[in-house]
Amino acid sequence: MTSAITPLNVLERRNIAVDIHKVSHHFDLFGTSLPVLDTIDLAVAPGEFVALLGPSGCGKSTLLRLIAGLDRPATGDIRADNRLVTAPDRSRILAFQDPTLFPWRTVWWNVATGLEAQGTLERHRKRVDDALALVRLSEFATAYPHQLSGGMAQRVALARALVNDPKLLLLDEPFGKLDSFTRMGMQSELLALWLQQAFTAILVTHDIEEALLLASRVIVLSDRPARILHELTIDLDYPRRRDDPAIINLRREIAGELGLEPADAPNIQKRAVS
Amino acid sequence: MSDLTQIIEAGKLQDRASPWPLWTTGFLAACAWGLGAIVTIAFPDVVPWGATQLFATLIGAGAAILLVLSFVVQRLGAGGRLIVHYGPWLIALGLWFTFWEISTAKLGWLPKPFFSPPQGLLNVYVVDWQRLLLCIAYTLRLWAIGFGSGIVVGYVIGVALGWSRGVSYWGMPVLKLIGPVPATAWIPCTFFFFPTTFAASCFIVALASGIPVAILTASGVGAVNRSYYDVGRILGASNWYLIRNIAVPAALPHVFVGLFMGLYYSFAVLVVAEMLGAKYGLGWYIQFQTAYSAYANVYAALLIMAFLCASIVRLLFAVRDRLLGWQKGFI
Image 1: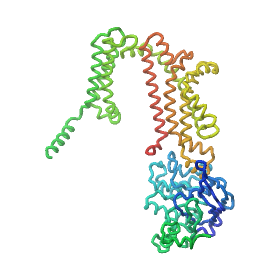
Image 2 (image 1 turned 30 degrees about the vertical axis):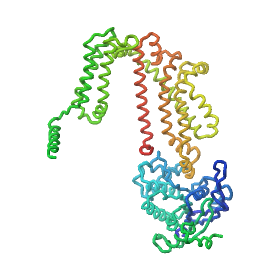
Image 3 (image 1 turned 180 degrees about the vertical axis):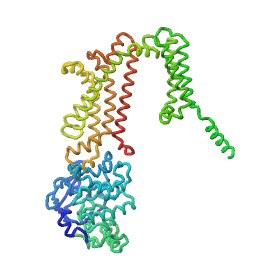
Image 4 (image 1 turned 90 degrees about the vertical axis):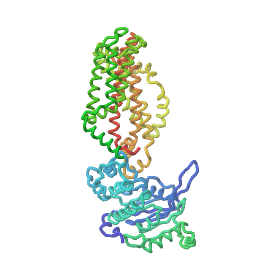
């Protein structure tokens, strides 16, 4: 179903597996310990598109930061490509909820940051141009971030991630702050990129529809501390339609799971993960 | 309604009819400057100051130029618009010259030697210009070396303080302690530590300009949005890359505040720094002339210092606008 399983991609190793093993985490706030993740067990296959769905502030972003290697989990361990994650690595790129572009750098230099930091920019200048072309922002190469709209800034952030040719792309509610038109456009762009580039993707979102349109598997998380409530494999062809009855049914089911539709409350017991 | 259109039409016709529209403000400025020239030349000075004739000629010429400008300024493009912008100031300046002239030279309300009319200052420049030029050169040399080394060292210390917890733990209390001490209080130590009095003077100026730069740079680097570092680390940046390409540019707006403060402090201590056995320099000149109660010379030197400082501030603004162009619409 996805291009990830074509032989070419297996040869090129364009994607990696992620194993999250009994990961728990907490924050220290004013001397008290605030648990955010509760024994998360999750295996993501190479080339899979997994959506982590849960209420705001449930700890989804924390999980992404742990996978990226920005922070270490309090207990449990995370493996990427069978290697323990201890620090950030350019094969695992995290795109934040805010574009977080460097305001003092032009669009081109924002995208070039990763290559420059790794000292390979001179050899790969064309990749920066290609990445900008990929998100259709070539004409804005010399613009500064303050001259961009929210959607354009988010696309630059996406190009800045993709230029590093990530084997794992971690997306932290990347479209959460965009208007609905821009968001829809960005979702199809992301989908096209994933189908084309075949990286492994983990998307954090609190938008049920977004998860269902993009992901091959949806993980439903509880409120803080986050536990895995439920897993759904979405076996539907891309591109998916918002008004597909299957999508609508799944959306209702997940909303019930999250306690958003009390009528479906009995479902929770029935479908709870063992 | 038709009346209104008629008036507008008439106005348009008038515009077309007169190719030399009058700039009223400029005309009034010309009058004010002319008044100053007439007052200067028509009444005798209570005591001789010298250069009265010259001053009258100069502001008379100014009045003539303003008179011409008040007819042609609209045709001068950008330069003309700048002159128009400062029109009210030009009027005020003419009136100020007139009032200054009357209150000092003509009526003696503000007497010699404590006050000086404009021709008194002009006379200083006419008589003493060679020595003043030498003093300017000496002062600029001291200032450039002191300020230059001060801001470089202050900047490096500031980045280290803002970046490293260890440096900040040991350095910040020390900086906070010596920060408020006036740079001049270090004079006894500097005499002991530095081989020449010139080096000691440079150190005083460097200290005055370096401390605000260090403090502001440290706070700027410390205040950088943490997520910029996260993005940098995600993209595989080393610590050195994070400092050079994220901490430093992100802190630049703060650094410039420090530079402006350092610039003013450095000028304030110049006079004192030139007490340390200097042979020339504007600060030395001011003290030397004060000792002889030659206040006209003191004012003349002060005026030069003010212009120097203002020019350097202007230059620094130009540098800032160039380096911080990305800030437009961001802050």
